[in-house]
Each structure stands twice: as structure tokens, then as C-alpha cells.
Amino acid sequence: MIVAPGHNMVLPLMPEFISPQDGAEKQDCERNAVKRWLIAHSKRVRPLCPVYLGDALFSCQSLAEAVLATGADFLFVCKKDGHKTLYEFVDGAPLDEHTVTGRKPGKYSLTYRYRWIEGVPLRDAKDALAVNWLAVTITDSQGKTTYALGATSGSAMAVRF
Image 1 (cartoon, rainbow, N blue to C red):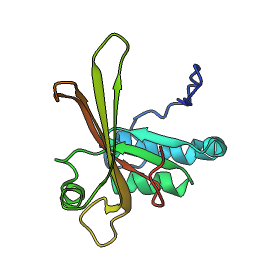
Image 2: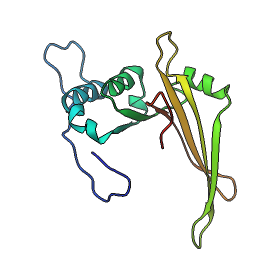
Image 3: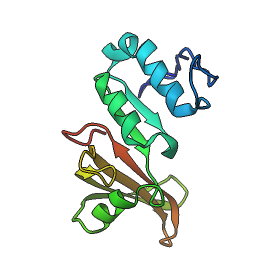
Image 4: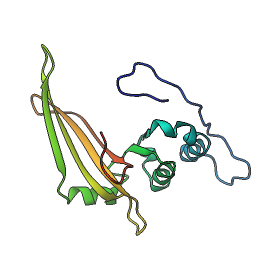
């Protein structure tokens, strides 16, 4: 679906079903369905400058390259257990950081901590795609983490928010 900040409407898009493909030896999967969808529909949505979102299942080099080939960007969740090389790089590097604390009217305060780094390898290989890594952590007024997420960004030039 297409969503945009500041708009209260959602535009559904054509689905791409996971189903056995003619002549294929392997069972179909979500990643292959995404690649087929990009081939069939990415030109139509390209003028909207899309940022494709996906969970950790989609945070792999082949899908990242497929999205970038359409001229779009991506924001895919990446988890430590599935991206060991990326997190080894991130854990040993100095990160840019921005912290914001806000109070909800009549409620408690929350602290949002944003961290990011540009140009980290997505995988352990000579041809690894360089991606941006960013994370957000939300803590309550007692310092308890209420939300944490790490993701890769498909714009190799800069992290876009």
C-alpha cells in the first residue's frame, strides 16, 4: 500500500501472490514474490519516490539491490542474529546520535534515541552492498526500554528521515 506523511488515506496496491512458478524447481517464497512485484509495478510508482518498507525477512542483498535498481530506496528491519557482520561493524564504530525527550500531556515522559551510521556492509562478502544502519530506542522516565528497532536504509548517499 502507499501511505504518505500528513495524509489520512491509504492506497492499496496490486498483490503478488506466492505460488509455484512455471518451470521453477524450488518452492516460491516471499522474496521472489517481491522481486516479481518490483518488475511488474515499480515503474508505475517510481514518480512517487517510494521508500519500500520490510521486516527482517527482506533485509538481504538480493532484495536491496532489486529495490535500488528501480531507483527507489528501502528501509528494512535487520536483527543482530541475522546480520552478524553488519552488527560487528556497527558495534565497533562511532555512531551519530540524536536524543529527544518529550512529555505527553498529563502523562509520563519518553526519551527517543536515534543512532545511525552510513556505508556499512550488509553481509560478509567482497561484493557486499554498503547500506546505512539506523536505530531508534524509546525509554520511559525510569530508563526502561519500551521499544527498540534497528534497520538498514537503501540510500547509500545519506540517511533520509
